[in-house]
Length: 163
Image 1 (cartoon, one colour):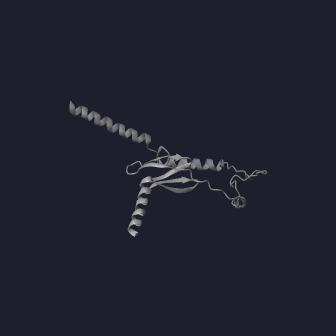
Image 2 (cartoon, rainbow, N blue to C red; image 1 turned 90 degrees about the horizontal axis):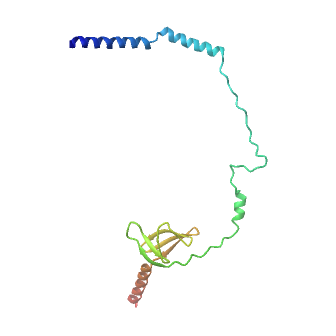
Image 3 (cartoon, helix red, strand yellow; image 1 turned 30 degrees about the vertical axis):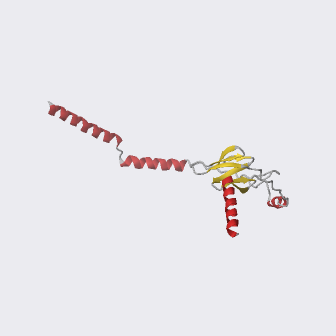
């Protein structure tokens, strides 16, 4: 019984494969005739070619959007004006925390970190020597109280040793 069922299944599979192959197979003559028909159709009806119109930009007195607002002549004329530098605001450093992952400073009774802004000055760097701030495009070094005290002590020690 098992052999008969196995033979039936094999016969059905082989039959399906043969039928499927015949359905999808194309004869070479049919393919070449299809190509010839497409070629004849193209020769009879040529493709439509659209010509693009030639567009010319006319600003009609408006400014060119691809040129800057400030022309080079104007830039040189504006450089003759002198800009007065603003003095650095008074900063008092009460303490510096510089050894950890997030260095911080206590400045003007506020706890600040790198990137914070105080009185229009941005904190650029914090280390054991003090704080570097950016104010009006210039960097200023503000020394910490410990660094100032150690500098005073070294000056006093050198004066004592020199006498």
